[in-house]
Image (cartoon, rainbow, N blue to C red; front, side, top):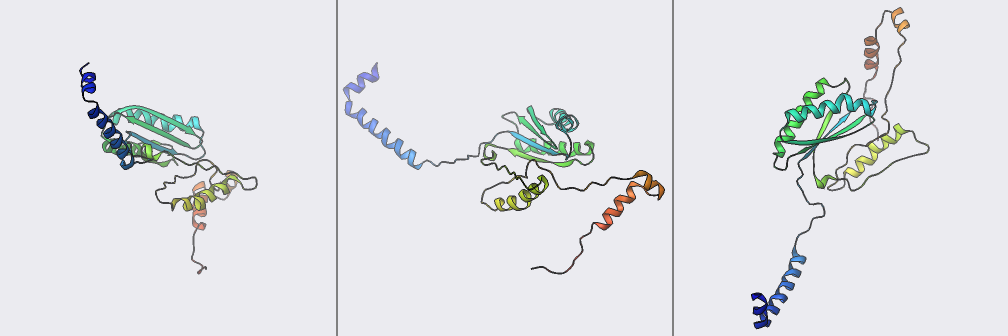
Length: 221
């Protein structure tokens, strides 16, 4: 081959070229900027639906299935969808074509989700729409448990204390706690007693709302 003949005729030239390649390679390694969590643009959007107290099968049939069908027919450049449902929470991921307009897809997903909220079961939390990327993959997960505290109190501590402390870390994005039980009050009505007093369920709701007030009582230090 001609390159072999040239190398045999001019050995010092090729030795200098090899040394130059080694030096330039080392210089490039030392001066090339690195990023552990590079901003890799992945055309994926995720919609998080919440409906407390509903089974995974119910939230999948009542919310997720309708959400996927509507998005595939009204949102541009949807390649396929994936969903994951647990008790009270569902995550729907929309995968777009590589050349899709990311901003347009996000705006369409947001608009479709808000329209779907009107047709969702009463009490459904407004959906949380986020743009998914490789840099948003969680690098740390905390699991809380206790032998003495109930699930509702663990949820309150993680949401009001632990989450707020972690959120002050620079560059950290802290989502809401997953799982547990949220504190709530349930009222069982005695229909016969209500009818005897000429009252309805709306009267009970109005009475509870009138008593659930926050009144100023002074200062605290």
